[in-house]
Image (cartoon, rainbow, N blue to C red; front, side, top):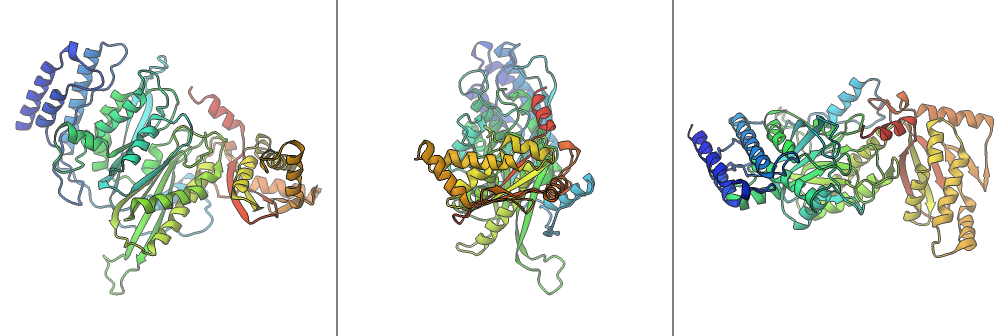
Length: 588
């Protein structure tokens, strides 16, 4: 009762302070925010079990006003809505508690993944989704009316919260190299450069928050508003007070957005949905698969991979509580179109409980990304929002120089390779996955570039979609790339001649069968039928609309230049009618 009385007093004071002529649409006055911090009720955060925390008080954020209302009316109404939502969430969550994440009992066995039904695929995902120690998942939904398209109303959006029990310095990230990065990417780069701790990642789908209209920097401000709103609901550190404490909590939140480019975030609606998102992390027993499903856009099914590495096996004294020492890595990914990453990829979040320093995590992540996500392409278009984050809860000790680092790198690469395959297999309209192996290259760059040129050839992609072994399109793609890119310092005929000399001993295979050698095709009727059957066997079904992957088979293509030791394996997809349909109707 006393808390409610204080809240009523604070609300009355706020209304008196926020006079229309002094109203700001981006933030309330410092005095009003301080009073609200002083008088708001204290939510229970007993779900943070690692050490006692002093609950934080809610910070005040007033986002931009709706266009149809005056700044004063919009700011006051939204302020009251945020206060009401935070208060209700705090009262509802009081007394709630979460148990520690369950011990991982089942380890996934290696082998071919074959799924006869949607249920079987879901069962496989369930074996992957157990979170490492120290992580929790929350989610909520909302609707919004885009200001850029006034005729469209009540569009759906999901918020996904990845929450750690306590802040961690052990995190790193890689971002898109696109010259028009989204606002969340800019904020993420700033967080990484500041070198501060991280406790939460908040992801919205439907809108990517890239170059939206409005005042300069409005996109970044919208992302920061969401961080501040979430920070106001989380007790991140003990003893923080006032506006400075709220700002500190906001800097421990990493924002991410994916969806339509050019639209602005519906900040007021998202702020009102944040309490439910936090409550979900408190009260719902969600795993990584739930998070993977929540961040989807045009994805047909969630992508989640997990690995458990045992440090010590269970003891021999038959202690039922002793499952041995182990650490875990779990990754989720979102991405189906606009996929050809450089340095990073789509949206990917990797969680572990092994305590590794940031420098080690960064080195491990760059190596894994280079061999996985940087070796895939769906449509050769690089996103403006590509982000991959690796974060540790630091729950499992790892002494400096420990051999566990090598085991971690191996497990991380396996998770990333699995997710990379899932992204391509789940590509928009994908009905075949192509695996292009380049061997015998004089340089790594040539191997990777040639592999990408092959999987991105529109003519070859269409041929694969139709189960047509038109190998002439493969040879044309190889010759074009080598002629255009090898010995770039050479010009004209000299360069072309150099390319011919490189390809003089080139051998090409499809489906494991030699189709080209010594500058000539090796084709016949029997081989033609074998290649057709090889392609048909790799079909994913339903003409690129399947709701789960039937198998992990691929259309195999191999190009051996025979003049070096560098190799690369690039994954790509075919080009189907469904891909065109999805992207022709993307916004409608």
